[in-house]
Image 1 (cartoon, rainbow, N blue to C red):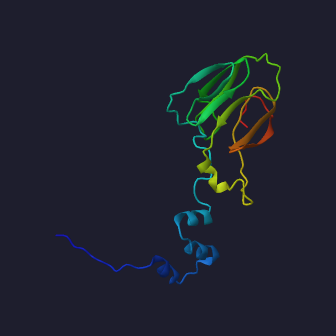
Image 2: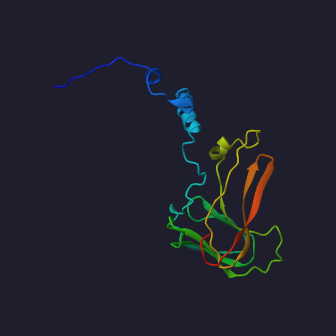
Image 3: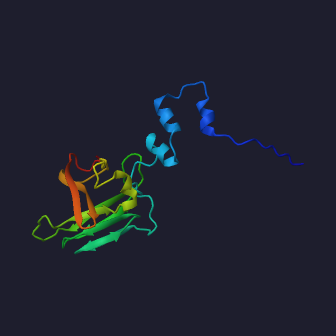
Length: 191
């Protein structure tokens, strides 16, 4: 035997406003949210990290290692990460099980043959991640409401010294970027 119980529809917001317990200022704002996205924005919910696969665990190409000689641009290894290389030396890029606490994988660059190029600012060796523009719309770049971003990462090197990391935007008709230096303080230690 099947029993069906029908209940009249009701407005959840009205019912919640009838609660005796006060919900506070933020609770009142949350109740006024028109969409789920409005509510998520109000409570700062959702994925804050724009980078997908930063832990290097998704590897659909079954990348293990690759030797790069001469210029190689945009050659992908683990999902979403690619290598750009403009020098004439030789490097090996590999996926390693050596990683900082809380992670299982990392990408390692090993110099096999040093570049003999007369190094200038136009030469580079980079691990790059291309962010799709849809994933940055909420940052409101190009407007007066632009939001700040922070890049955080783990790094380990066998040479102490200065290195650089940064962002570059390829908007239609213009390229903008911000590169900052960071210092490796101790060799062979995750920092």
